[in-house]
Image (cartoon, rainbow over all chains, first blue to last red; front, side, top):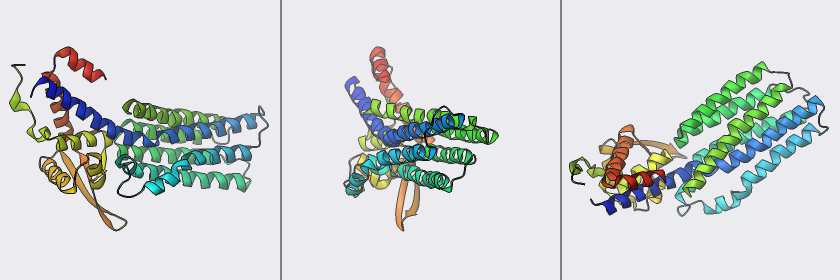
Length: 200
Length: 107
């Protein structure tokens, strides 16, 4: 094997690995958008509870749930059409991750809407519950995608869940939940998205 | 280049198809047969033969399961396979002049 062949092989390995990495990053823009949207919901709720803002929490949360869903589902028709043997391998391979997060999203949406329409004035329990589901989502994702650091994000979510239990029925719980959404959802989404762009 | 140990090159990874499988699994984590076949752009038969060789060498692990009553075969890279890929890349880089090897790694 000569120098040119070695260089050619290294380039080939890099291209193939980049293709694999794009699979892992396929869901990252949605993660980023959801992290920011839900963080806005929490910070807005905190501002409302503290009297800094007069926004109606129910309307705020509806917007913070419906808008990211609209973003997530924007490619659904194209995805349905593209299913089948000719669908790009990357898209197909991303399915277990997408389905897992889709399931988490459905659960959290039902939980969120039920809380909004139940009229519960202090649904403190929802914050730790959301954090627990996020922990499960990231922990499972790390094994599906083989991205090891994601399991630490999952564990951090569970630590956050405990902290949210400790802050139950206190406005600071909303502040912490918002911060967790930014740090443990939006930031990982951004990091994954950057990795994906670098590979593209 | 005279000190390069040619016998140390992993012959298993000298096939482009097998190299592609190992490299793809190293970054993607796991993949089922059809996805892997599409990703490396080869035929069922070809992918099957090369995957069998990699499995026999302990480079990839296969898992069979059912999804929607359809059999699904999933492959993942083993630690041995990951080490083999890293060793192979190290051997390739040793063939390059030091400056070029470092430049290639930093990209």
